[in-house]
Length: 455
Image (cartoon, rainbow, N blue to C red; front, side):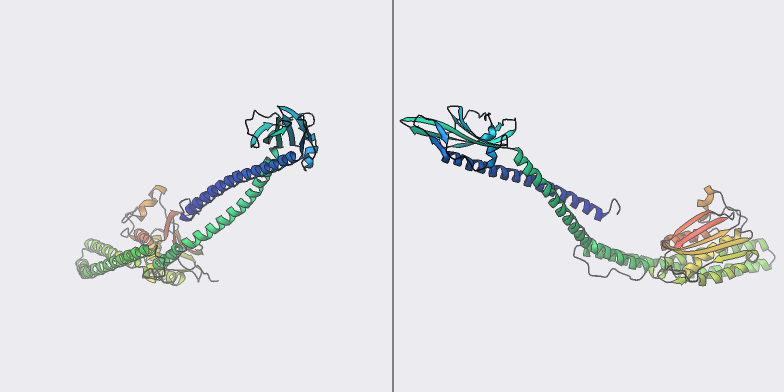
C-alpha cells in the first residue's frame, strides 16, 4: 500500500482510535479495580474490628482483655502484613502477635464515639499500611474509658492484585484490539469495494470493452459515476469531432495533392528533374502528415484499441515490403516473434507503429536489422535494433521530435519516430530509445495485450 493510500489512511486513523480507546479503557479499568480492591480490603478490616469489639472485655477498673481474636491466621504470624491493636489513653493495651513487640503509630484522631476512619500509616517494618480505626467509649463504675481499635493491612497486597489484574487485562485488551483491527480491515475492505468495482469498470472503458460506467453503485459513489459518464460522453463527442475534422482534412487535401503529383510528372517530362523531385517530396510529406493525423484519430478511439492483433501476422508482410524498398533488399532482417504474441491494438494502428520503426531501421542500417518480440507480465515488448551509425546520448531525445532529423542526407520527412511517439502516448504504451550493442539504435515498445506465447 502506498503512503497516500486511502485504505492506509483509514487503517492508521482506525488503529490510532482503537489504541487510544483501549488505552483509556485500560487506565479506567485499572483505576476502578484498584478502588474496588481498596473498598473490599477496607470492608474486611471493618469486619475484623467488629470481631475485636465483640471479643473485648473491659473490667470495672477499665482494664481490657480480649476473649476472642479475629479469625484470620495472619494476625498470629509475625510481620505477616496484617495487624491489629487496641489503645487506651494513647497507650497500646492489646496487640496482635503479628506486631510482635511493636505497635502502630496512629495519627491524632478526633473521631467521635462509634465512628470509623481510614488512615495510611507506616508498618512495623516501614511498609505502607491501610488502617481502619474505630473509637468506642465504655462506662464502668461511673467512669468512662475511651478505646481505639485499629486493624491494618499491607498495601502491597492491593498492588499485587492490581498488577495481576493489569497483566490479565493487557492480554484481554490485546486480543480485543486484534479483533477490532480485523473488523476494521473487513469494514474498510467492504467500504472501498465499490471503488474497486469503479476501477474495474474504468479499465473496461479504457480498454474499449465498454463505453460507459454501468453497474449498481452505492448512493455515495453514484454522483462520481454520473460525472465520469458525462466526461466520457464529452470525450467521445470530442474524439468523434476530431475524427470528422481529420477525415474532412484528408478528403480536402486529396485532390490538391493528386493535382500536384500530376503537375510534378509534367515538369519531369519537360526535363526539370530537380523541381519535380522537390514537389514529390513535399507531396509525400503532406500525405504523411494527413495519414499521421488519421492514424492518431483512430488510435485515440477506445474501440480501436480493444482489438487483439497478432504481432507475427502484422510483422511478416511489413518486412516483405521493406525488402522491396531502396536498401532493404541488401539487409539481413532477423526476427524472433512467438506466434502467440498478441497486442490489444487495431491492426491498422499496429501496422503504422511497426512500419515506422522498420522504415527508420531500413534507412540507417548498414547490414542487419533485428526484431525481437517478448510477451511479459507488463505487456508485449517489441524491440527493433540496427547496426547503423547511431546517435550520441544527448541527441536521443531529438530524434522523436516532429521533423527532428540528424542527417539531412537521408530521405524522409523526419516524422517516423514522432508518429510512433504520438501513437504510443495515445494508446498508453511506453517507448524507449537507446544505443544498441550493434552500433545503431535500439527502440523498444511495450504494448498492453494478451501475453500467450506459442512454440
